[in-house]
Length: 461
Image 1 (cartoon, one colour):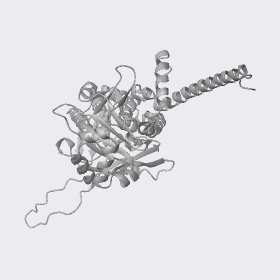
Image 2 (cartoon, one colour; image 1 turned 90 degrees about the horizontal axis):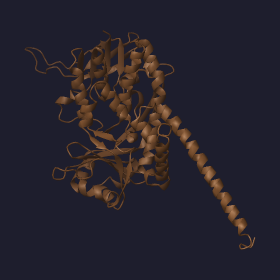
Image 3 (cartoon, rainbow, N blue to C red; image 1 turned 180 degrees about the vertical axis):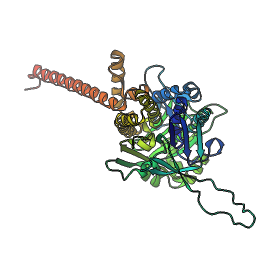
């Protein structure tokens, strides 16, 4: 059977291992961290994940959808918290029954690693750092980072040398080693490889609301949102009845209003009074004393394939800001699309990797752009009447034209319509809305003119 080596055992790497285990390929996965199933704390981003249709479809293909969905908390709407801390507005995500699922990142990762390891042809190598790609030999260069025993044998001192680099050969190499991918970095000198990286001005800090007498402190089946113009707070429920709470704000906002204990408590009490009570002074103080605001990066690159046997996937190909909840879903869809492309080309790896890149680059760029746009929506637009009217209009049009008029959020979240096609459909919808507004304005103007003409004597004209 063909062999595949995967850089990274995160969400996308682990799911790819499941896909290729199912195909019967020989699979080797190299991961810098220790096995997370043995770790008490796992470093890295832990913003809760929102599983939607694209991710569910990929999990279904490897037989994990039902189990994973049952491990999460369904969310049917946004619940927008007003500044008074007492009033709210509810915005359903889609049609009745349509929902996303709040999922714990670590548990999901652990489940997929365990699932992949059930296959005898899959091997995970933890504590192995991916260093680069050997261009000439088309091999993955890795290095074991686990320390050999420091107990010296008789007459010898303990070794201080690093472990030697290992060159791993395979028919297919999948780079799933994250936003700061070592594989992608080693490809930067290749001519015509386009790459862009943008840090947005906003960072984030994560907090937690504990269960209240073994019950959820807030309504659990909604996405809680506190939009405040240029900053926002969100909260997603966990299966253990806690909430993961994240504040997103410009770094300047953190520096000016959240740099001291007094300031940060005043800031939360003023802007998020209901969340402030449940978070508690001690937790807010301890968190902001312990952690710094974390950055958010958006990465695009093209192509996603090289050398007829190497593919960049997930954040290594398209890291995005988290405001559309599509980072994981897009990465999972990468796995599914590539699996489908391999089948389409009869496991001809060289043809499949090129076809995949051509198919996927535009979609990846599109969802990156949509994710950036959606932050404007979350922190401000959801409170505007124009946004609410457009949402109602889209809902009515979808009821009338079920297949031809699907709201933007629903296309992204509840379908597998390619992201690039989603944008094109939205542009067509915007043209229709713009035409309606122009026509309506024209008729209104004609009515005003007619009214003035009819009453010209009264008006002294």
